Image 1 (cartoon, rainbow, N blue to C red):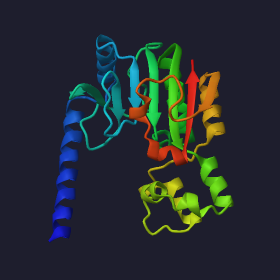
Image 2 (cartoon, helix red, strand yellow):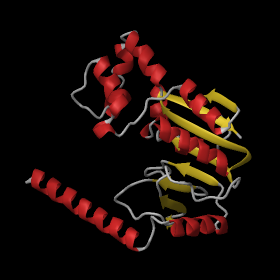
Image 3 (spheres, rainbow, N blue to C red):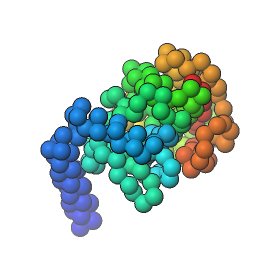
Image 4 (tube, helix red, strand yellow):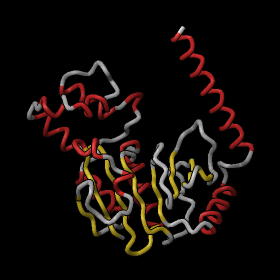
Length: 241
């Protein structure tokens, strides 16, 4: 009975998602016309903080951006006291040049491959003001690789590392390492470390780039963006335009 209910719920979610996608298409949300509307709307709302890859974490004072195919696309909505936008950031960002002060994203850049990462940082650079701050955190390739080489079971047996592993049959350090690289269904597209993030940021034009720690840096609301449980696996990078 439980399995049937679960299958039914999944079907209902898929149908709702399809309807939202269809509605968005009918409303021309995937067009350049809508992109211009979003640009005008963001200016009227005086948006200058972007929380990218926000998931369910919606911050007041920020435009919280996610990309979820089953949600209504391409319109700025208010959810509670927070602004929310479902938008594909591999398209041109709907913000004017030099208008954004802060861009922050926790555990989202790994969902973009190397080319996607280059595009992401170039768009961030374009829309940011001089002196604006970009903050990125993600799983750290070096941390996983070093612990794998050392065969450090303490790291791979950490409760968070095990819980975050989407392949529940992965038990050995090598299996968990590979699972983090691919994630469930290949959701992770690249495994970054500080050097690779710095390289892509430099390609975009950033010059002041530093590796930092979870609670250090120049981004407001950082404790609401980056969670302590992820510190064991994460690399934290800030760049100032």
